[in-house]
Image (cartoon, rainbow, N blue to C red):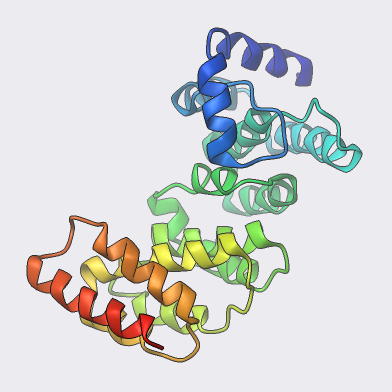
Length: 243
């Protein structure tokens, strides 16, 4: 199965050399990037998932993990991402999907392995996924913590959870760049629907100045805020830079 999937990925990458070079710079991975586009990866995952069990996906992830440990060049960026997409597409229980996600996360080395993998679905807004996101926030691995943050942003920024989201994020101590960028993105996203609440949260001392300023920057770059709100954000941003 492993060799067949690698062959399918190679076929999908044909003629995409310039895209591969571009994407390699963007995703910032140490793995080889052959240039399979995300829509093609999603289609392949959908095609393969119907015949795959949790055990099948676990074996594919085990192959990726062995390649990672050996620093093998065969551990393609697209192959690892496809394994993640298979977890989302396969007809497996939440418990099996979470178990596979625990296996998937140590294999990743790019923000894209997280951001493309996390999807907004009613299924992922359940209590078991909330608990798993919180578990990931306590991890030492940068991309696992990012997964927790992006999961909360994607499926739990609603009226029922917003205060809880802010509360749990106050305990995130990881100083990794991709964690801090994820936090800034979450706060900027939260501000769209919870403007006053989010701005008040950003004033709390547990948020470092870099993350706060990055959140304000992302808000300033967004078209989802009114001119009046943008004026408030700009004022906050200027005040934060003086700290």
